[in-house]
Image (cartoon, rainbow, N blue to C red):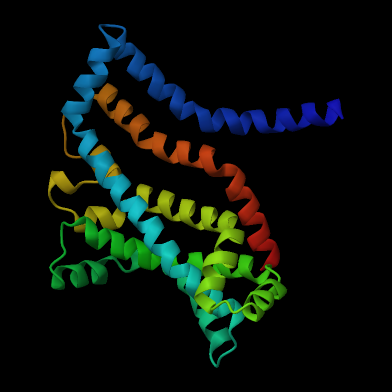
Length: 263
């Protein structure tokens, strides 16, 4: 047992070192700047110099709204695909899975023209709508696999007691599907938070920039780059995703395992 654990750690250590090396570089660069003065002064100055606070708020609003919207739309749709029998049900499921082949970068030109036609260029609402549209098929597929594993007898017993479809969805399916909901919502949040191409195409003014766009603006087209500020901004941009994953990793792993297993 001990030998197997040592072999596992020996195999994981290079991968762990490879993933932690960028953070070591970031912390070392920040420490060198902070060693020449007050660390607190550096962080306060960086916050205002880079305008990272506005970008952080924009990213959080967009990512949280995307996670909420895609989950709220995907849950009843997944329930319908799981429980109802209708013509075209299999084709709809296959279309949802096939839509994942289309990457946003393939459609960026058409999407930008559509957003401009709707008058939503340089708005957070445009990104929320586009991100939600791309996340809903994956969310439906994940939630459907989990709902398939919920015993139908629970719903039949509730119907005998007079519960409606909406009550069954709210009182039975929703509580039992929380691990899968955590997976889909977290995946939508992380994807929307880190997305770059659509945000770069649609957003124009610095007041609407998301974190990836703001960090890119700190280096793009500049002759002199303040690397400590850039590294500190990168660290700030990484923290929400890491904290979200650490907070929900138990539910994510459980929901992902059960959803994929039932699918």
